[in-house]
Image (tube, rainbow, N blue to C red):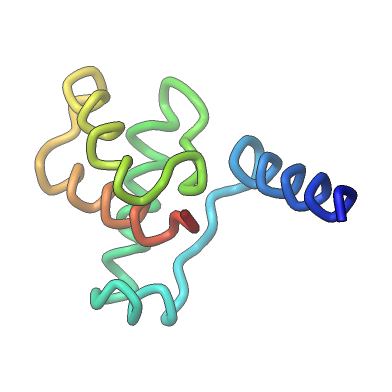
Length: 98
């Protein structure tokens, strides 16, 4: 039992720290009630805007409801406009597993 929790915790940590950003699927888009292209646009913006200065954060790094404030903390420094912010937040919130 403890071994299973250790493995699960290690996998979650690996996913949050070094795994590539997941691509959204049609299931993700359906769950979020948005077009798949919108989620992929958010992923692209995340890589372009956030990835310039540091590794783009994995969606599992924070719970879905934490992402708006986390993105808000970086808006001014990264020169993200309101449309880009919305796109990035939508992607991160939809793809977060917590």
